[in-house]
Amino acid sequence: MAVTSLNSFLEYRPWRGLRNPVWMGAFAITRESLKLIFTRKVFWVVFSLAVLNFLLYFFGQYLFFWVADQQPDGLVRVGGFGRANQNDMMQFLRSVLKMDGSPETFRNFINLQSRGIIVLLVLAGASLLGEDLNQGSLIFYQSKSGGMRNYIVGKFLAASFLVHLFATVPALFLFLEICFIDTWTYLLYHPRLLFGIIGYGFVINIGLVSLLFATVGFFRSTIGLIMCWAGVFFLLPSLCAIMIDRLRLNPAFRVLDFWYCVERLGEKCLGASPTLLPGQTDHSLNPWLAVASLGFVFFISSFLTIRIYFKKGVES
Amino acid sequence: MGEIPVIQCRNLSRRFGSKTVLNNVSFEVYPGIIGLLGPNGAGKSTLIKLILGLDIPSSGGITLFGKTKVELGKIGFMPEAKAIIPSMKGFEFVAFAGELEGLKRKDALRRSHEILDCLSMGEARFRKLGEYSTGMIQKVKLAQALVHDPELLILDEPTAGLDPPARNQMLDYLSYFARQQGKSIVLSTHLLGDVQSVCDQVVVLNFGNCLASCSLETLVGNKENRYLIEIAGNQIDSISALGNLCIGTQDMGGFTKVFIQCESTAEINHIASQVLSAGGVIKKFIPLEGNLDDAFFALLDKQRMEKI
Image 1 (tube, chains in turn cyan, purple):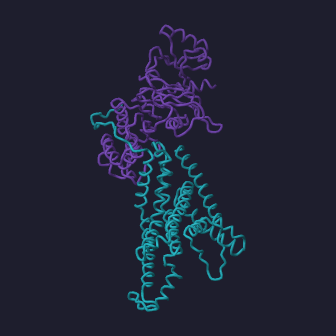
Image 2: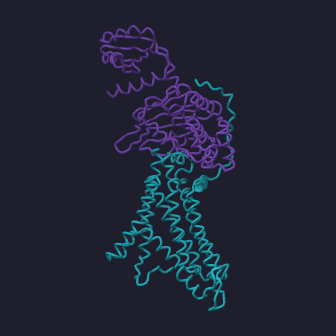
Image 3: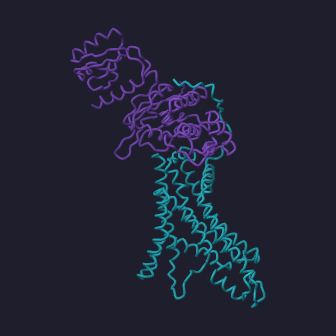
């Protein structure tokens, strides 16, 4: 028989308080997952780069509208860099940097920011989800009242938060900046831009997060994830480029390039025109094919997510 | 024993393809500490997952507290796997478990400290789980199972990897929560000593079959008119000659331990002569002392003999 004295215990008190609805447990999972990501150095490195990019666009747009307000056809002083022709500057900001508040501005900005998201999810995704698989923690979540449903929702929200923190929210700030600098009628005349930013954010969100769930479920480790995502984001685009530009195959083969499809949908959301080099023909993919590609990835990823995570939890 | 069984299984089966992991398991257990015993691959973990509703039975059903729908909020589960989040501090992890069970953040934190105090975790609760020893991890796992004050605790190998003092302490906690706080505890373990120390009832599983489901006393404690005979020589005929008196056997290589239960001590001479006439050689004939090890192995051997 056990020998420790029971007198050493402090009294256990039954708990009879009120409980939150079970689904609110998902928010606790989101909070703890984000805390986990925020403790990673890689997050702060990528976040810093994303902030720098945001500031570049922020001040670029500011410069564009400021120059536009100067005397027409005059010379404008640009800080300590001397004077520049107003038209040349506007042309440079509009055509080269595309920092003029147009749909292309937001497309380019979100595209750049989403590169950061990809790097972040690849490097921190394994700790967001893979650790639970490796540590056998899924059974911990599964045995709680919300079960795996709360787990999946909570983790999805955490990853989505990161996507919107890097892409959608700063893009909305840039949009608001124009409203402040120009006039609020900008908002009335460009509602598509506003909804396009939100729509593009959600397209990236659904595409990347569902892919993250499925690939982490398979590979679990950061190395495996890097290999897989390198294939999706570098190998497939290169392969499609060779097939279409060199071998002159049907442009519909771009449907294989998942990231191109996401960007194409973003373009459609924002109403931006595709970027073409001089003399390049428009090989843009039919948006419905892009939708089909994203839908296919989402469907397969969701299927694998449910299969891997639910099964793994029961097995552990 | 209470009127409503804590767990009631009726013809419970679980098959994975052609492999039957649980085969028509039926038992009912009442409030108290219930030992779930069985060798590796007996079906204990599968049974636990079915109780928790994490898996679906192929046939049959389970009721918990008389209800067919599993209310996870009434159950606290301590998994065998490490199942921790290494970057979290002890008290945060327990509070997090509370939040997953619907406790408000503030309540969960307060409750977490209460439970960890109760389990004598002291300042260690402020350290990250990744720095914990096995004993501390087991305590935190117990705390996360208790944080929402469940009626039923399901503990999978709670003393695994613990040194003797930590093991005794863990068993003390279990006794305390069952006897003084009225919780029902299912203790799944390989350690028969742990079961004998604290359990009131036992369920013995082997190869997916339920070999016994009764009180611990019934299984090991009723020593009256129970004897152990060690038989050499013609063992098979001797055991057959004993018929229904034989309640279990244990093959020891050169001889067989046979456990018998007779009506009265007057039968002893008759039994001895039956064995001898069947060609057996009696090495030992002693009254049986209550020991879970013997009873457990006897059950396993009896099942093996029945298969032969």
